[in-house]
Image (cartoon, rainbow, N blue to C red; front, side, top):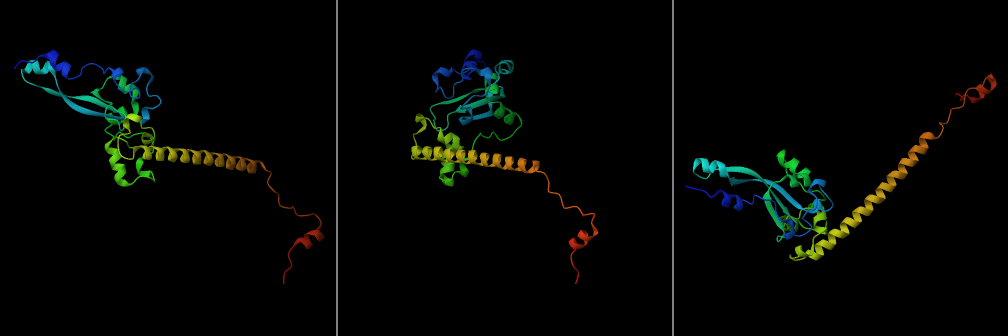
Length: 214
């Protein structure tokens, strides 16, 4: 059995993706700068995929496979903008936390507030959104127009935005209260301690200060 090495390499997507064909929200401009604003809202998953080892297959005159590291990048809710390709250094630099979790065999968790804590979503809706790779309230609040193609999408997005605005205001208020409490505690620590009255050298005054006994 003979193999066309060039054909196999082409089928296995051996060159980086041409990002110009995809939504700008998932296409980076400088791989060396690492993660940047908006990356925390993307669905990113590193995984193993069996691909043909061209050199080994030619030597063995049969298909020989090897496990390769692959990555899936997607704007949650938008199935028209999905990239699946081998892991290049650009992805390790761009998604260092996910890459570290993958290498450690840990679950690749998304950054943000889990949907399950949203009071405006039922457990069934949480599972439906999870199918669309929407797993955090931040991802739901930042859905692009191209991802607003499921029932109630606009309503859920606006509810997520309101939730984040309220929690952000609460956190700001809590921070102000904690700062005031710290100031009060600092003032209390600098206030001189009250001293107990010292006994007088006058025996008569000491006699008057002693409590009467029945």
